[in-house]
Length: 625
Image (cartoon, rainbow, N blue to C red):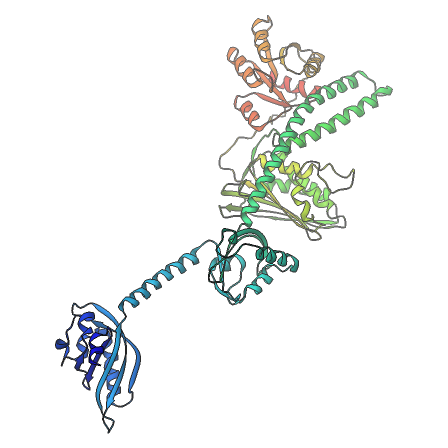
C-alpha cells in the first residue's frame, strides 16, 4: 500500500476533522509543488482557491454534523506553490469511531487541469462554430444516422420558415418541402444512387423547387454531404432571386434583339412608305373625287397610313421613337385623359383613380404618356367583357439594392410608380413572359395587332423605367410602371406659337438622300410647291454642290443615316460655311440619341414617312422664322 501511494499520480491525502493534513502523497509535490513535509499539519483550506472556500467549509460542517459521509466526483479549484490555479476532481470519504464521531477525512483525486483547459478550448471553438454557422448566409440542416434532425441554423429557418419545433425528422421535412409525392420520390431515389460516404461523388448539389412553410415556392440549391459518422449535412442556398435576375436578363436580351430587328425593319419600311404616301398624295391631288381611280388611290393611301402607324409602334417598342420630353406631373396627365378613358372603356367598367398627392415630376413626352394610358386601358377593357373595375394608382417610391424590382434594369433611386389594375380574365402564367413581345396576342383574329403592350414596354424602357406585370387567371391583372423622378429641368419642346404657315415658296433647298426612290419623291413634293431643288445622293456630293451652285441655298433637307458623311455631320459642316443656313433633318430611324444630337445643334427634325403638306409646312415654318 505504501509503494502504491508513493508511486501513484493521483493525489491522496488524509485530513483530521479540522481539515489539516495528516498525510499527503508524494504526488502533491509533482503536481502542485508542495512536499509532504510542507503539507503535514497545514490546513487544507490554505491551498484552496478563495472562491471555493465557503463551499468546502459548508461541506466540512455538514460532515462534522454527520449529515454526509462521502462525496464522489467533487470538482474544485486549488492553488499550487506558484499561485497557479489547478482543477481538482476527487472523492472524499469519512472515518468515524464507534460512536459515529468524525475522526478523519480521506481524499483520493486527480489534477484535471489539462482536461479542463481542453474542454474550455473546445467550448470556445464550438461557440465560434455556432456563431459562424448562425451567421452563415446559407441554410444548414444536420441529420443523425436515425434520420432525426439534430440541428437547424437560423439561415435554414429564414429560407424555409421551419424550426426544430416544426419538423423533428428528415422525413417530415422532405414531406413538407416536396409535397408532390412523385417529385419527392424522384429526388430521394436520385440521392440513393450517389456514391459511398467519403467519396467525391457522395457530396453533390442540385437545384430544386421547394415549398416553404408559408406556401411560397422557392428555387433552392441543395448540397447534400454524407459524413463518416452516418450523419448527413444539408446546406441550402436560396437562388430564387438569382434565378429571377437571370430570367430577366435573358428576357431583356431577347427583347433587345427583337427591338433591333424591329428598328431595322421600321427604318427601311419608312423609306418605302414615304414613296408610297407621297405618290398617293400626288395622285389624289390630280384626281377628281368622281374619278373611278380616286377611291383605289385613297385605299392605297389609307393602307400606307395604317402601315405607318405600325412602324411607329415598332419604333416605340424598340426604343427608337423620337421624343419631345417635358417636365410632367402624371396625376395631371391622368386627370386630362379621364373623360376620354371613360368613353373608351364603356359604362359597364367603373374607373377609380387613386392618385397620391405630392407626386414628384417626371421627364417624358406627353404623347408617350397618353400612349401608355390608352394602350393599358384598352387591354384592361378587353379583359372585362362583362364589366368590372379599372383602378389607376400613382405613388412616390424609393428603390434600394434589396428591392425585388428588376435589378437588371433599375438603379437605386427615386421613382414614380404608376399602376393600372383590373379584375378581368387575367393572363395564364405560361404566357406572361411573352406579353411584351410584338405581334403576340391572345385576342381573336382581327381584334388586335399584338403591339399594345410591346409599345408600352418600349416607351417605358426608352425613358429608363421598368414595367412589371402581375396576373392570375380569373382574378385580374396589375401592370406596374416605374418611371425615374426628374432631377433637372428640361425646357418644353415643340413649337407652341400656333402660327399659320404658307405651304408655297421659291427658295433654293439642298436635298440630300441616299435612297433614289425617296429622293425623287421628296424632290417632286418640293417642286410641286414651287421650291427650287438641288438634289444630292450623299454627303460629299452635297458639300460639292453647296460650294459650286450659283444659287443661295436657304435650307438643307437631309436624311440622317447615309454612307460616308451622315446627315448630322453634313449639317454641321454646312452651318460652319453659312451660319444662317436653316437645317431640317429627316429619318425613318429615330434613335433618341440621334435626336438629342440634332436638338443640341438647334436643327429641326421630321419623322419619315410624311405627307407632302407636312413636309412643306415644316419647311415653310423654318424659312419664315
